[in-house]
Image (cartoon, rainbow, N blue to C red; front, top):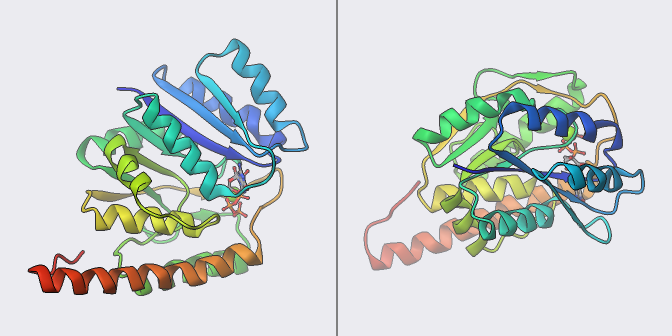
Length: 248
Ligand SMILES: Nc1nc2c(ncn2[C@@H]2O[C@H](COP(=O)(O)OP(=O)(O)OP(=O)(O)O)[C@@H](O)[C@H]2O)c(=O)[nH]1
Ligand SMILES: [Mg+2]
């Protein structure tokens, strides 16, 4: 089985060397694809040099900051074209512990899609200011209620997909760039009836570099969940006329 860890980066020079080192050491059958948006701090340059001597590391560079959503879509296309079986999403800022990778790979044997969850076992977030935690916690609750998807951590960026799930996601119209990209992927995986499981993780806020969180990203998430709700209602009407409702 071949595994690809996709890591989008934008100005992560302080974190990138240790995150890559740690992922490479976890297992020999895990490759890494970094999607860098032309970071001014030399992140891409570091990865390019490493990729010359370490064949398990690949780099895609994009001309400018184009957002997390399109970075992952590009990574998904690469993973499918290269024939990977398991595909991870992971942040570069070490909030996601690379030591959890084996637990995900164990879990994916009995599921199609594993979400590393901060909220499935109480709250397992370390070092976030209360305001940031509340924003994330209530955004998740809001997304869950509006979309109707019974997942506790809908905005998690630490995930492992079976190839068939990524293939299905690439057929859907995913519109977001920020956190709501994560909500959309969970929504579509549910709609496509894949077996989704939440795996408790401990999320530690970044020590280095700065957050790319912005008002625009929060605003986008606010509206995107209503788009998903609308899709759910419209498709349910179609299903109603055609036969029994297959709800999730
Ligand atoms: N390629 C690319 N990567 C991005 C972009 N925006 C964010 N990233 C990366 O996506 C990952 C998550 O971004 P963060 O800024 O840590 O955002 P977050 O983890 O959702 O939020 P924080 O809690 O503030 O850390 C990091 O690896 C970033 O470098 C982008 O526009 N393009
Ligand atoms: Mg982060």
